[in-house]
Length: 123
Image (cartoon, rainbow, N blue to C red):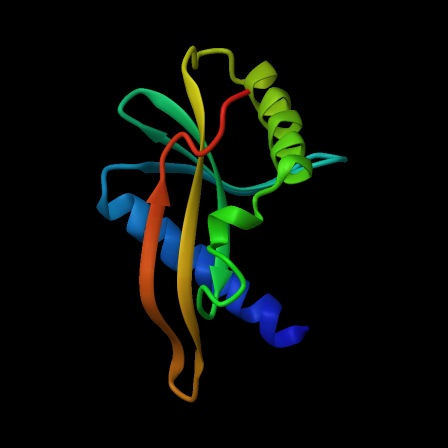
């Protein structure tokens, strides 16, 4: 379990870096409420983006995006509602998923692929 948590943290770090390199402005990482956590909150082209990062070694058990099921989507929506209430300046928002594929290696975390799924689900 420790290795999973470590690879997840590396995945979030690489996802944030990738998003920044592709025009996103990171506002917050690991936003937490009593009932939800959002990995990354960012702004992209005037749109507030609530981002779930899924780090996987490979696609053997499905893509990272496939693991953002209805229950996870519901929690993200609840977290987003909490954030929007305290930041009413944003009128547009969406939910994105970043899939990070890679694994822990002796020299650190090796990323093999990163995919951004914009507007991954609707509310």
